[in-house]
Length: 114
Length: 114
Image (tube, rainbow over all chains, first blue to last red; front, side, top):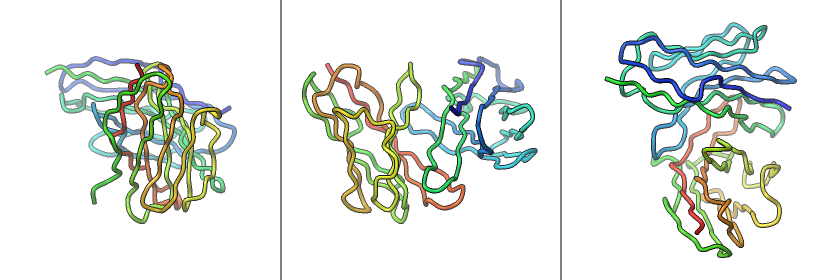
């Protein structure tokens, strides 16, 4: 079945460090790929998506590029801030008929130390 | 726009009791999703409604879980004979339901079964 793998369970950085969170997927078709962010006590929030090969999604300084050949959608940010501390989820979704549920990775907890 | 509203925020039930969780989606959104979130399993899809009709309940434990959407302004998730393994955060999300429209999540209901 379709799946999303996030390599890092937890990432600890200092402010202004460069961030990469790895996301790889396995899918039988051509899904759209998403990044969501979740802060404590809240539900996940949509960050951005990409729906075709080589498309770059971005928001709030975060970005990721859809790589169909490598089946990847790695999240990056050039300079993290303490306020970026949260859990980040990679997900995929098909928009086929009425079945449009998201398939989620297990999440990566980012801790940014001041 | 108050966003997706979930009530209660916290619920404690004794083993074997019933729990009912409520979700008010964003007005005008046609798709409503229920997810369960635990540290071990991450985000698990439970069920999905479109225009109040059940579309996909493949994630619902069949015996004790049920979900309804009696009108466009609310959905309920009912768990009968709750067990300690049902302890989790239950998240509701809604979406306009067109194209790659994004999910908006509520803050969740944290259920503790003791």
